[in-house]
Amino acid sequence: MEHENANAELISVMVPCFNEEASLPLFYEEIRKTMSEMSAYTFEVILVDDGSKDGTLPLLRSFSLEDGRFRYLSFSRNFGKEAAMLAALQASKGDYVVYMDADLQDPPSMLPKMMSVLKEKNVDSVGTRRSNRKGEPLLRSIFARMFYGLMNKISNVKLVPSARDYRLMTRRMADAVLSLCEYNRFSKGMFEWVGFTTEWLSYPNIERAAGKTKFSFWKLMKYSIECITGFSTAPLMFASLMGAFLCFAAFCGIIVIVIRYFIGVSSAFGWPSMMCVVLFVGGVLEWSIGILGTYLSKTYLEVKRRPVFLLKESSETSGDGHSVDRRDSVTENVREE
Ligand code: UDP
Ligand code: MG
Image 1 (spheres, rainbow, N blue to C red):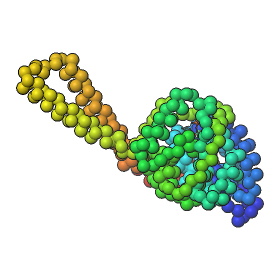
Image 2: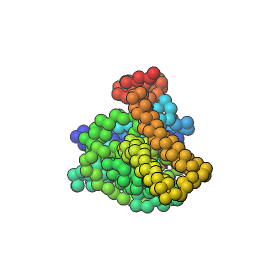
Image 3: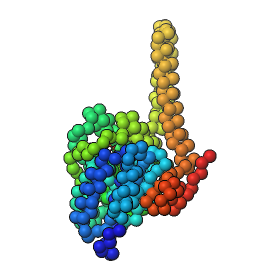
Image 4: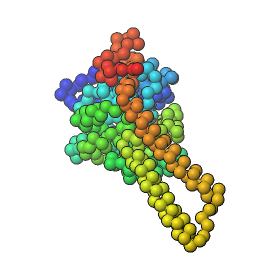
């Protein structure tokens, strides 16, 4: 490690990488430039290979050989960005930790500014948000806006619209995030849930430096359901509210029928109206069961207590390439059925 100043504070840069062979060489250059500009600090860069199928892992190996500040972890398969973020945080040793994407959409050049804001404002976290969504597909922007609107209505945890995962935190906040040991992870929610004070910096959206996005529209939809079920139980109220509404409607219907009977008007509206009622009630029931099922499935995954990720190799393992880093707490409580 390049320890120019043994007393300097350590910053851990944490980067999830999934099939990032195209953007990693560019990222490597950029982050090294930033590190050399911030000579008052020492650095470690933790790159997590999230089961990549391309040349990502050999690149990570070569970075760590070339520059001792670069460490890497490699998963046995693709466990998702959230798992990679957890692995990096668990491995980090820094007084400060910062998440960054490998595609340079989170510009490393902003780090000095983030660090000075953290110190000047005496806060525990500096988050970043995009001031626009230039270059993003329209449908994705519309759904993102709807999602943040809905989420902030139904959850106690308030999400900042357009917030990125690019975030600098103090060690005490990082430890607070680590104390949340849930299996279904949604970092943006967890960062807000743990509290502490956050300052926000805005910057215009930057398009990916190279390669393609790893989040399809459906993957993002699944991710938002993760967030809703993880941070709100409001959907569970849906069944009770609909039940109450239908009871009220049925009660009004009965009164109308009784009145019509006494004034001598027939109340038989026939088959079509009956079908509508049957389908409506059936639909509401199915929907409610679906919502219950979603929460149940999340609970099922939590109680199984499977590890969030499994390692197959890391810069600290002694080169056989297949041993699992046993020091990792997550891999220690493997309890597969
Ligand atoms: N990523 C990951 N595992 C995944 C998907 C993505 O580690 O299953 C990483 C990816 O390599 C990148 C970051 O998460 O560093 C953000 O992904 P991406 O840029 O594809 O998402 P977008 O910016 O398009 O939302
Ligand atoms: Mg990206």
